Amino acid sequence: MDIDATDLQLLAQLQQDASLSNQALAERAHVSPPTCLRRVKRLRDAGLIDKQVAVLNPERMARVLGHGLTAVVEITLDRQDSAALEAFEARVAAEPRVQQCYRVSPGPDFCLVVHARNMPDYHALTQRLFTSDANVRNVKAFFSIKRSKFGAELPLD
Image 1 (tube, rainbow, N blue to C red):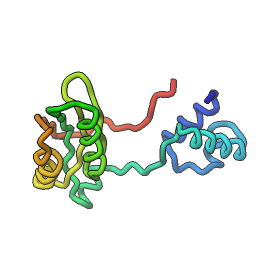
Image 2: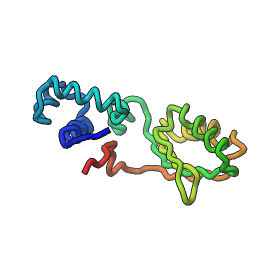
Image 3: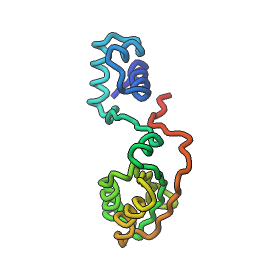
Image 4: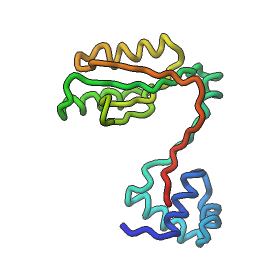
């Protein structure tokens, strides 16, 4: 698929604020609303736009729901064959407290970003995902004390 500067502008604007109306998006990209709608549909159909979500503020949500613990967790497996890696990925993908999962190299096999209400909630998560899995050899967790930056935007330059 070929994309041009207008497509890149639309993608950049949507990464900043996906709640923009078609009219507002068209104005920012300097195209007509029908053109904007058609182009965004084409970008979605091509799979360049995966989904649109609301990004919640974790500090404010912690005050409301108690989700106050964020951890970056390194996981090393005993066996790294394709089936073992995919089984682990499937298990963590099904866990709502795991926000992100990356298969990495070198070093650990996976890095996860995990959100939990508190330490007992995190402990229960580790029991479900790691302790009960005989293939998990090592777990190393780093607990966030402050989020300095967060973003989901891909650089388009």
